[in-house]
Amino acid sequence: CIDVLTDMLPAISLAYEEAESDIMQRPPRNPFKDHLVTGKLYFFAYGHIGFFEAAAGFFVYFVIMSEYGFLPERLIGLRKEWDSMLINDLQDSYGMEWTYEERKVLQYTCYTAFLIAVVITQWADAFICKTRRNSIFTQGIKNWQLHVSIIVETVIACVLAYCPGNSYLKFYPVKF
Image 1 (cartoon, rainbow, N blue to C red):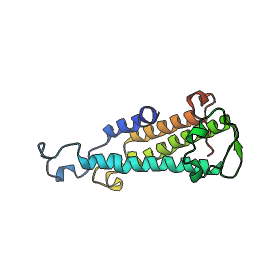
Image 2 (tube, rainbow, N blue to C red):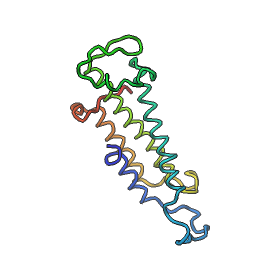
Image 3 (tube, one colour):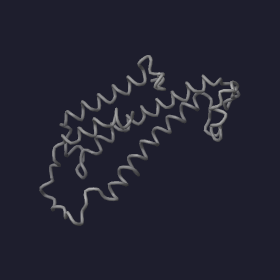
Image 4 (spheres, rainbow, N blue to C red):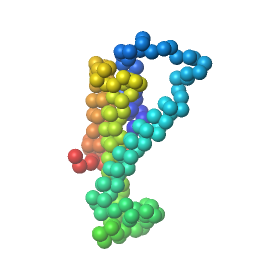
């Protein structure tokens, strides 16, 4: 859902971005030495942006689990008991018992929150990736395709999270 439904349109909309305003003042790229995809670009995409998207998702996951009584230290080593359909009295950090069905609803709610957190960080990512060197204030924000794609990805995330009947996709509503 993240790659195909929510990230695809903003990525494609960046193709409609105007050239950077100072592009003609820069020396040309050496095609034999200066590759388009470099280690620096990989680090920026996966090590920097990917790290923050994952961190936002895991932060939301742990906040929701904590709000419902499962503090992070309780979650360590809990998977076998959590997934057991035979255990209907699993205790959280405060001693409250959870049935298998209640646990799964909480788990899928966390999955939905993770998706929403990644979509929100993708908003920032789309604007960060508009240019490689210029600031957004220098470049401007005239790309209407980008704005529309961000709105569409947000609507898709809301449909996945809040439309009735999406529980078969394992999406459950998240509190605002």
